[in-house]
Length: 416
Image 1: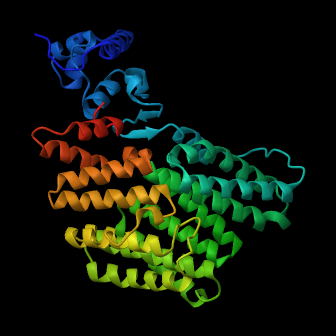
Image 2: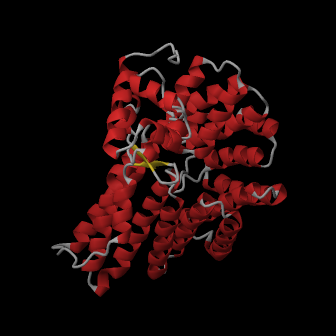
């Protein structure tokens, strides 16, 4: 008997036809394909007839791997709402810009393209970087905004450096460091931990060639983020704290250096919090708080977003990471989300708050935070593993999950 579901219709039949065509192209029989997916032959038959919905991402990923499909839109294009992603061998979601960035990071520039006016081209590249950072912080789809420009920026920065005369190399090293920092941020946020680490390492090498303490410190901040993305919290703390110690004697020299110093202490704080070292986390947070207070309420670093608002939301994150959900919720009440000058950081903050509400078993408040996070940046919800985990846990915890939660799960691709 066909499995009944409420919204069966033409979209499911189209998906079924695609699945059947892909299976036949692969040369797989119904039984073999179903067995490889860990499902029954009857289940797959119903999928191909459009009588059984592919309603779980894990099932869709398993089927895509069996069918040799990396782009999920080949199966469920009607439900991707214009966002492209692919499936890796490990079953993760992959952003469409990642292969292009991987190629640029892996392919040498040889021979370099000639550059007629290298100072002018360098200045153009610096302006493009500023526009990219602005788009990253201001767009409701920051991953798309950055993914569209990052490969070209990397390619052009590398070519400028290869074409530069020795007298211009300090300028091009600085541009390379800043471009690799931007690439690392994108790769970290879309879950490409190893590529993010590669970009961070190259940013540090380039920064060290400039002998610029601030640029070196920001590259260390980038390396700390990459280590956190790999779950290497001890390494993250070591990099951040060492760089902060190196920068401390210079922290009074300019606002930019003080901002970088504060950013490093925030990352040291979150690394401690993830290791359940609450006292150390708050010690580093206090140092960051003092720096932000000295810089004033108008200061927001364009790369790290360091400022009073960012320090406040890290306070919420520390409470969540150290198991103090009630305190996290109380802290969040004093934060005006709209005052955070970055859509991605606003979305991340709301995800932390949703996790706090989940631990309090307040599902309605958690769902409200998740939905508000989605309005700030849909892509942050899609690619953040903790957001996806929280949505999945909420579905499992509710006997009858509300329609708003299921709709969110579909848009975030927790279910297909």
